Image (cartoon, rainbow, N blue to C red; front, side, top):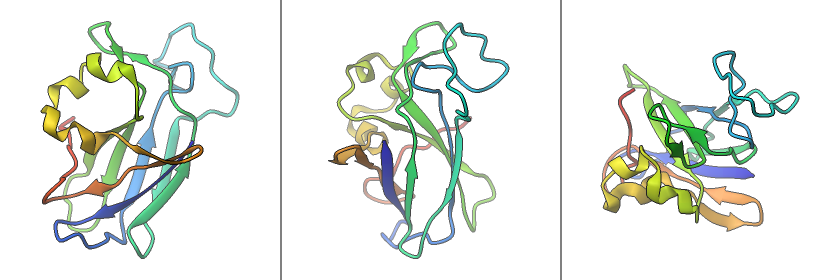
Length: 151
């Protein structure tokens, strides 16, 4: 799947110097990390990490696999998602959020997504933009501000 989007500030202006890092499980729901001891397959060459820069319009593009569901600390299952960390000028601390995939029935029981007020959940869910393409924009402030988490 290819994910495209933009990062904009509170005035809707593009953030042209952001770094977006992504962390995710593979399509089976296994992380490429030694602490993930699940007996699930780990695809060859899967790293589970990506880093992209925004362009002059605040845009970004990355291609990855849709992750499978992963276990939450309490043993329940989390909906497929990608953890996103944003670094940029003027921030003393990075921003952390998640991007969820559209039309996934697992959203209703996801232990993180259900903590977000229903009216704001859409800021975390990508939309379909074509065959194999998703659109997900990040609004740093203002109307439609993306939900960010304290980790």
